[in-house]
Length: 242
Length: 114
Image 1 (cartoon, rainbow over the protein chains, first blue to last red):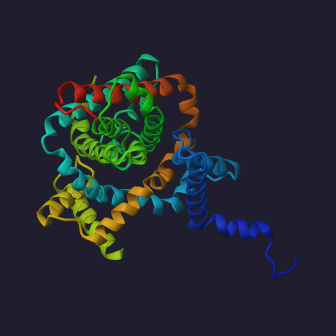
Image 2 (tube, rainbow over the protein chains, first blue to last red):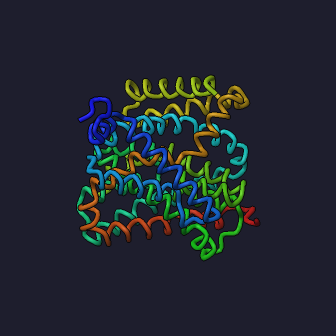
Image 3 (cartoon, chains in turn brown, purple):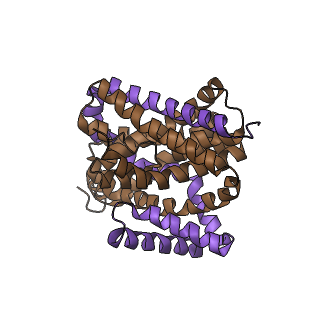
């Protein structure tokens, strides 16, 4: 064999051993997801997160790359979740002005919504015979993914499964929000935004921003308050759930 | 850009330290968020550099979920054998959460007009 030209499998072995492959895969899958989303005029069904996850999951399955290996490279993207969580202080700060005079209804709605989220998911999963590991993933799933994973670690359930359920919840919320809120006759933008932020965190919030700015502001407020209160209350509430 | 990132990272670090030594039940980034929020309140405005980074994060927040969510491949057999329970729980729960939140708001808020 020509020593100047390494065989293709050598290049492959080299590439798959470095974090580069997982990083390129993650970022290009996200780019592809965003392109499809734009191409379909931001139709909620063409959710960029769902597309990116499907692409990455398919590719690593096809090339036989274990998830742990993929994560070794992708952890550099994952690390920024914590930083992004701290950065949520900015949209919440901007939303604080909107809180004035509405703090009581918003907090009451948040507590009712957060409790509904846990009780309905855990109740249905138990009713339909899911095992304890799956049910554990539902406790924090309506909280924004980075906080949900932190909470999951603290209540000893799988952070990965929690993240999967949290992201799926966000995508479902973004897709279904219009139909649900029309059905219950919710009209005010601030109420619609807050409801989707509480139920479907970051993905619901970016959907809200693309529909109406006021809905977006209240959605980020709903997501932020749910994240902060959820981080405190969910570990405490778990002790009361049989 | 970098100046904003440094400030956010400082609050993240501070949050991790507080979580590690004083509030082990609350995730560090959440404490960082609250501390940063308090700092912004005291300061009375958002520094432009911080605003720039925060906007960049919120516009690409979805990307950051991908590595963790790809973990679905590890749980695939488990999820598939409980597919009905998982799908039903996720769909009903998100619909119920949105409906309850919106209904409570409409019931007790005075200014419900669009």
